[in-house]
Length: 155
Image (tube, rainbow, N blue to C red; front, side, top):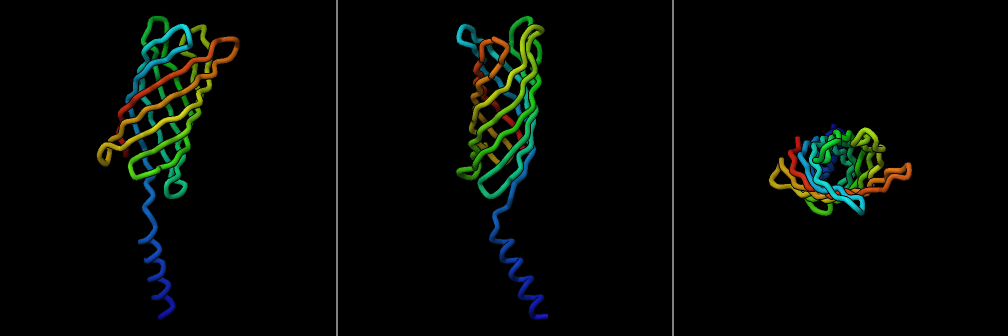
């Protein structure tokens, strides 16, 4: 009986000393600018994702998005990808990201985006973020760059 009580006390002490992991879903609205060296346009969209804690201060996440370049003859570009990053302090996430984006016009090509960002909590449920992506388009189409800012809510 004494071994069971000591074991239970040891498990309780370790559990109390382990930081809580906060796997979380998120939804955001975002906007920004996309440019390709000769042209720049405004863009707006939404994204939803889920971050998984790998260890204290380290996370990986998945994300889906829908973005629209705010000009005529463009359509919604659907995206799917992920991010990996660190939490250098509570409420701040710094990450690298990669995703695939469907084509944003009838005669355009799909793209692979690589980049990074920072996300900062505002209170316990809300956050603001800023991201940069380089879009690798291919098929002799010029690559593009995209800067985004967003506001979101965590669940």
